[in-house]
Image (cartoon, rainbow, N blue to C red; front, side, top):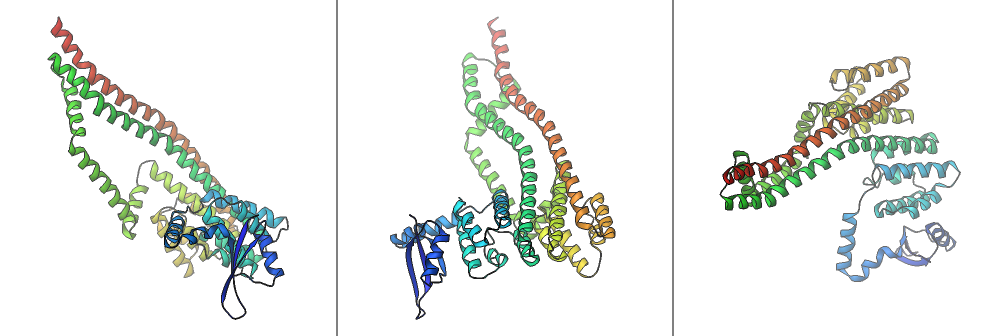
Length: 414
């Protein structure tokens, strides 16, 4: 039977710990309540194994925490869906959180759910409890939970959150799936080219040199490239490339750098339009879900700006938020920014006039998600033959460079 360690405050105010055995967290809490103990922290005894090893164990424990993976969109969507089903079935929220914690495989997520369950059991609101874990629960999840608690419809809010996260995950997977194939093919093509240039070309060049054949210009070009790749210059070039990538990432991490690069990304042919449509779909979906759940419009705009995925679009939403705070209509404020597509802005204006803004934005989100799906398929159909041509061109060039000198050798034999 698993062991749990409970930390609590004794009658004299001193901190004490107690080890007890129980089948799960819920039973451990029941045993503590029977003893009249109110635990400040309750966790599995296995979490403290490293403490027995002194400072090295503590260092290892801290390192493990540092390397822990936070939950992704898919994990959070599954959590929200299961929690909504449990709450809707009448299972107490603390019991539901305990069940979710025991089923969770990610250590960080499991630890967060255990602590949230303890806090809720002590009377803290669920929204307040999950706000203490920003690496696990984002602002969108927190706002939806808080709105559901305030309106007494937590199960409905969790269902909407699960649907929203699932839609976002589906949209991201569409884009990753479309770009994954051409990127993988391109990487393989580059590796094949480097392998054949570095290892195969020098072998044939040595054979032709022994035969006294004069190398054609194209073959000599690849031989020179092979010599260059095998020299120390290639190492310096690779180091310079890695440094450039690192500097670009550092620059993108700055306030101005991210805006410069994101502005350039929006101007890219095809991909810029795809980024804009994806950001528009996410903004409309998240904003409509938040307002429908009862989140104030200013808070909904702030949360939506954080999930836009592009700094230029995020800045436009935040600037519009300031204008809305001064009394300007949301559609008017966004039109002045000249960033989002006209169709989305016109539908938003109609929604404001008819009083069904959230419903209209939901339709806009559906439209742009379908557009993103269609564009992703079109890009995939264009990139697949292009990648085949690139790979064929690379392999064909290498083979041509190796076979051209053979004609010179045959002429000398004749």
